[in-house]
Each structure stands twice: as structure tokens, then as C-alpha cells.
Image (cartoon, rainbow, N blue to C red; front, side):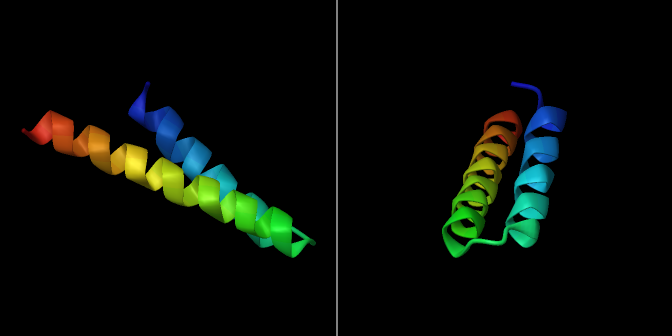
Length: 49
């Protein structure tokens, strides 16, 4: 998966979390934000090893 896509999806998740009007929806988007962050970190670690 393209790194630019992961960064873009992470940003979208954060924006949607901030715009959410429901706590459960905000948490779901924050969970996605965190998951994309983990995927980005894993990809960066794989490239640097």
C-alpha cells in the first residue's frame, strides 16, 4: 500500500473524528487514526531495516 494513501487516510480519520457529533463515531475514527499510524510506523520500520 502506498505511504501517501496511508497518510491521507490517517488525516481523513482525524478530521472525521473531530467533526463527529456522536462519541461512538468519534472513537471509531480515532481508532482508525491510530491503526493507520501503526501501519505507517511498521512500513517505515520495514524500509529502514
